[in-house]
Amino acid sequence: MKVLVTLIAVFVLFWLVRSSIRRMRGPAPPPAAQSAPAPQAMIACAQCGVHLPANEALPGRGGVFCGAAHRAAFEEAHRE
View: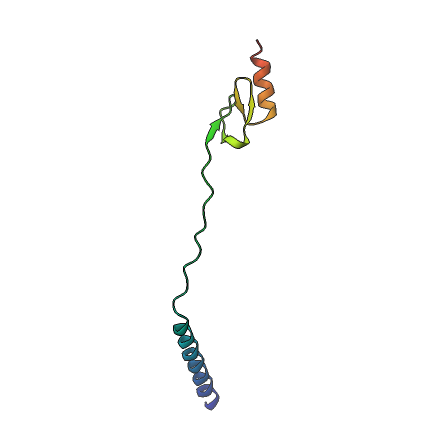
């Protein structure tokens, strides 16, 4: 029983010291604002219509494409 009372007293003392130290420090600073990446323009592949970011598109004759295979297929089908 004496050990239990001692443990409770130590816990309460620890809690009081910890809370007084927190009060002395003041409020925690707000976390730094994280900037989200800028949204990118989405464009459609001229062959299949899939939308993808503009910086990932492959330019070709007749538009932009999602991959080299679609660019080649489109250019083959639309030869002039």
